[in-house]
Image 1: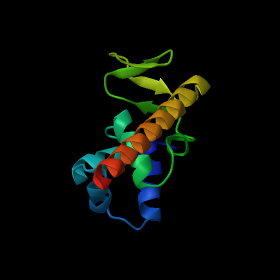
Image 2: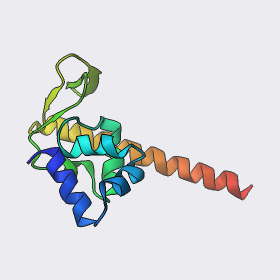
Image 3: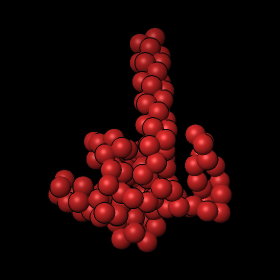
Length: 123
């Protein structure tokens, strides 16, 4: 299954139009349409936003997706680096583990940021 097919299924399960979904993702409807039709792929930061909007995690979002094409980037070891070869094998357990660790770190940062904002608002 392609990422585009999965995005379409998730969107339809929410009964959202492409325009509704694009608005929630803070992108244009034509850009979202290109994701659904596999003409282009979302960046890794947008994958996090997609997971958030569809109330899922990145692992579930990428489950059964065999490859994702990130423009001009690839994983080397545990790092995400710019490269001319941009196809990533999503079957790699190390890659999935790295993505999940990054997602967990991002969640912790957001929680810390929210606590800081709450404490500032109380003053």
